[in-house]
Amino acid sequence: MMKIGIIGAGAIGLLYAYQFSPIFPVTLYTKRMHQCKLLKEKGITLMENNSPAMNRKVQVKHISDMVKLEDDVILVAVKQYALHEIMPHLMGLNKEQSVLFLQNGMGHLDLAGRINAAKPLIGVVEHGVKKLDDVTIIWTGKGMTKVAPLRKDCMDKQFLTLWEEGLEDCFPVQTRDNHKIMLTEKLIVNAIINPLTTLYRVKNGQLVQNRFYKNAMITLYEEISFLIDEEKKEEVWNHVLNVCRNTAENWSSMQRDIENGRRTEVEAILGYVIFSAKEQGKTVPLTEFIYTSIKGLEENHLYTTELRIEEER
Ligand SMILES: NC(=O)C1=CN([C@@H]2O[C@H](COP(=O)(O)OP(=O)(O)OC[C@H]3O[C@@H](n4cnc5c(N)ncnc54)[C@H](OP(=O)(O)O)[C@@H]3O)[C@@H](O)[C@H]2O)C=CC1
Ligand SMILES: CC(C)(CO)C(=O)C(=O)O
Image (cartoon, rainbow, N blue to C red; front, side):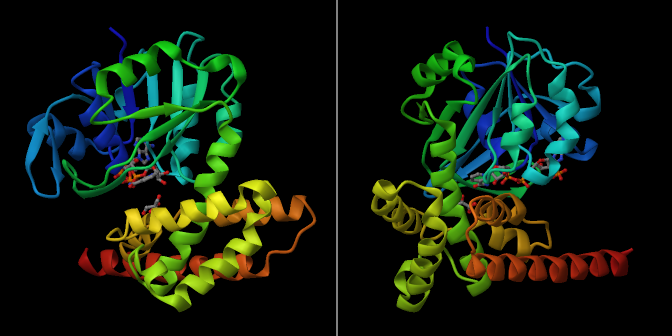
């Protein structure tokens, strides 16, 4: 039996652990001992609109018990900025093991490239998931997972076939050849929807319903679409609009991070766009302005949260 390890028991880690558990033995690695205990006691509860809550148990371990990862496939489900804490565990893997990165943005590509022995896979998550508490998630948007190998020789066909055959209706996966194209398309979606919904404090759907917000999307897209080939521009723009419509009732992850006083993934999203523009000798003033505005909000909200925690002590 192929064993799956999932590092990070947030919204995505809990969803994948829940979905994989009927077809693979799953071990979920948590950062906090308290969450580890709760998950052992209560299992994972999944809520969906209009369906009764469902519960499944998986094996759970605290990250400090992860001396050596024995799992065949390791899913990395932490945020971009926490990856450096995980990397030492991934460097010691062997060539029979695979690592699937599930982050938004592009910051993880360099880190994934450092994994030489094991097979690095890059995933794009098109689900929307919200964590309600340490053991409960709401599956707000159903989509699919796209997976591409980081290097030509590292596709884990066995794992992907088992996934496809075992979960094809309820939790689909699609494979892609080119991770860069796949990830860039998702980057453009996140580079437009996430910061604009955060600045305007609106749900994703409102970006296309309000003509002024939509004009702002168009202007930003014109600036950042240098990242894709000319012939793909219309298709990718339509994809951005469709994501807004399909996730109309979602608050973007950046908006939720800011509202909850957490760090955002702006570095790996807009930071990457600015970096790529510089490399290509282009100027992206609008992107730089939006990047700075999000960093400002982040600092403000993190500061407010720290003050509140301080006051509560
Ligand atoms: N949620 C969504 O709908 C989507 C998310 N994504 C991407 O998936 C990735 C994960 O997002 P999401 O699940 O929402 O984020 P969450 O913040 O909900 O989860 C991140 C989890 O990682 C844990 N973690 C942090 N550091 C460590 C560590 N050193 N060891 C073990 N666990 C650790 C956190 O633990 P703790 O709680 O203790 O801090 C937390 O449980 C992000 O890159 C995001 O962009 C992509 C598409 C959709
Ligand atoms: C697709 C989208 C924009 C859905 O909310 C997302 O990935 C996010 O919020 O990070």
